[in-house]
Image 1 (cartoon, rainbow, N blue to C red):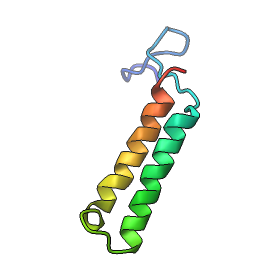
Image 2 (image 1 turned 180 degrees about the vertical axis):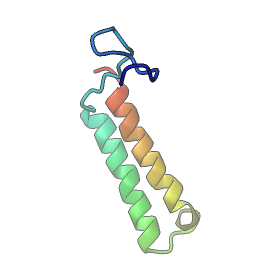
Image 3 (image 1 turned 120 degrees about the vertical axis):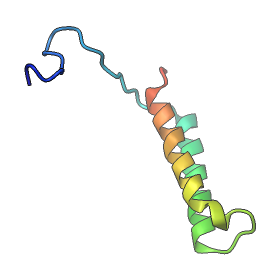
Image 4 (image 1 turned 90 degrees about the horizontal axis):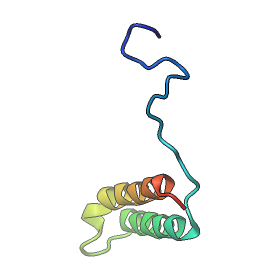
Length: 70
């Protein structure tokens, strides 16, 4: 796509390097996601109203694990 502001291939444009998350990042994300599922399926005080945000937090933790260098 020349002329539209996109860098041409091979010009040294900025790239995002993704890495495999370590077991710690993956496990933390999995535990947070399970807490979100439990909060969505059963009435847990102080958690049921925030299950969407807890699920988003699990996704963010996994994304940080992908971006973090191992």
